[in-house]
Image (tube, rainbow, N blue to C red; front, side):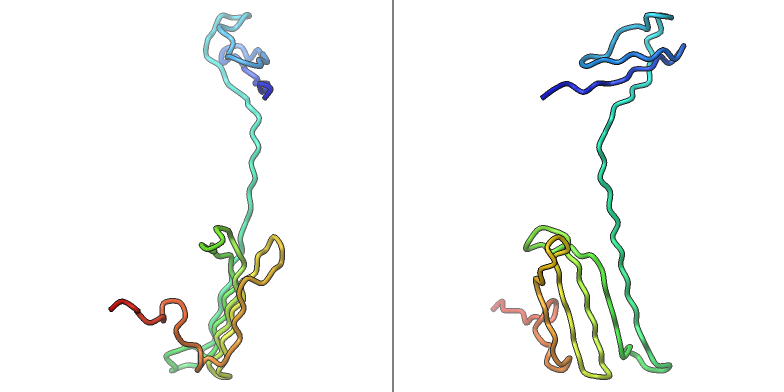
Length: 129
């Protein structure tokens, strides 16, 4: 692997020197040893967008419609996925879809009556005896 070229700038007089290995000693122009180091780095950044909404009638305890769309970490695969969940109490519907954003593959899909949506997630029965 080749050494990276690093720029050293004298903190006193501003003279710039390039070095491929160890930092140079004192500035050849003024003898000062303080310096600013400029080293190229590669940075990758990303953003995740999340949206949730609830529709509720005044006086009702629970919303009749909930929607969630967000990036979520999928532990089984060890990567980030896109999750969409819709709970529609008015029409008795539960919908959830988990998609791999890199491939577009559907990892999980559940579309069923909300009244039949049991034993999932934190609602799973405890099997310890």
